Structures are given as C-alpha cells and as structure tokens.
Length: 273
Image (tube, rainbow, N blue to C red):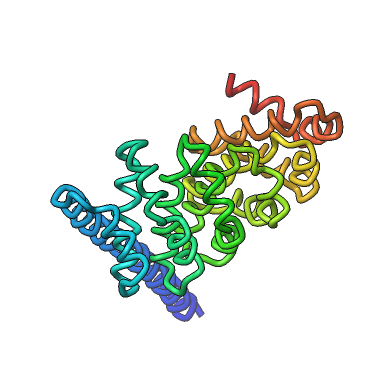
C-alpha cells in the first residue's frame, strides 16, 4: 500500500510541476509577444518621425495617403498625422483644413484593428485642447465608431478609444456620447485587468458625469461599487480618476451620494487624502 501511495504522491507532484512549467512557458511567451509588439511599434514610430522630419509638405501628402493608400499606408499616415498634431496647434489646424477628419473617421470604421487604433489616436491628438476640432470630429460622426471600438477590440484599441471619447466629451458632447451608448462599455472596462484601460475608462466617466442625466445613467448601470473598488487600485492614476468620477457622480445628487456611502467609499477616500 505504501509503495502505491508514494507512487501516487510522486505522480501528483510531477503533474503539479508540469503545470507550473507550462504556466511559466505561457507567461514567457506572452512577455515575448508583448516585447515584440513594443519593438515593432517603436520601429513604426521612428519611421513615422523620420517621414515627419524629412518632409515639408507632410500634411497634404499624408491626408492624400489616407484617401488613396493601401491599408498599411493609411495606418502609417494616421500615425504620422497623430505625431504632427501633437507638435503644435498650427499643425492641428492645418490637418483639419486638409480634410483629414472625415478620412480618419472612415478609417475608424474599417477592417483592420491596427488602422482603427491609429485613427483613434490621431483624432484624440487633433481634439486635444482644441474646441473647434472637437466639434468638427463629432460632426464627422466619430462617436458611434469610437463606441464600437470600446466593445470589440484588442485592448490597446479600447484604451485609445476611451481616451478619444474622454477628450471629445470635454466640449459639451457629454449627452451625445452617452446617448450613443458609451456608458455601458466604459463601465465594463473599469473591470479590465490593464491599469491603462481602467484609467482611461474612469477618466471618460469623470467627464460624462458632469451632466446630470449622465450621473443617473452611470450609477444605474452599476458604476459606483466598481469605482469604489478602484479607490484601492494599485495604480495611483486609476485611484485618482476613480475618486474624480465619484466626486462628479455625487455632485448635487442625493441618490448617488447615498449609493457611494453604501458602497463603502469613505474609508478608501480618506486614505487618498
């Protein structure tokens, strides 16, 4: 009997060790993939920066590529325009004048996740601190495709889509964004395992909650307990956005104040002070 028990124990140990080894391999593979992705992105960005610095007429040329290029060329053009847009307000204005917004919105609706992601990044860069561009982007119909990206994308794309919606919401588009269906997918992203996604989703809710109807809608879909959980998040940025979202949800709304108290927000909020 003892021999058999020993044999079973050994088998059990081996199975456990194999499982551990298997998990370790999976983890390493995941890390490798991430690293490869990072290197590829960096190469693309370096290539894009080179195009920017070599080129005096980059904007018109890149917008033409958005219109007529292959999918890869369009993705590259969106990347370049995003970099150019962050460089100066003059570039932001020139890119919009050249007709890039409609093309980028088209790209958001296309088939390639990479292209959709770059289009979202470029639109966010065009909208940053620029009310006129925000209005132009919303008028061009960017909100519904950005909301679609929140629901069905590789996570990197969800993150930039949430960020773009946050930037667009800063100019009184809160109602339009909420009515187009952004709230449910944004609240779902509060549970994402990646801190960047949680931060962008909470950040978008901060801005949407400035509107009284949205305060009610956000609380109704169960955001309060999730945001209270995020007050204990490992990421300081996530904690900060969660606290700001709760603050805006509570503003002059007794029901939300009660819900926030019930969810146990006070002790973690006190820790943040």
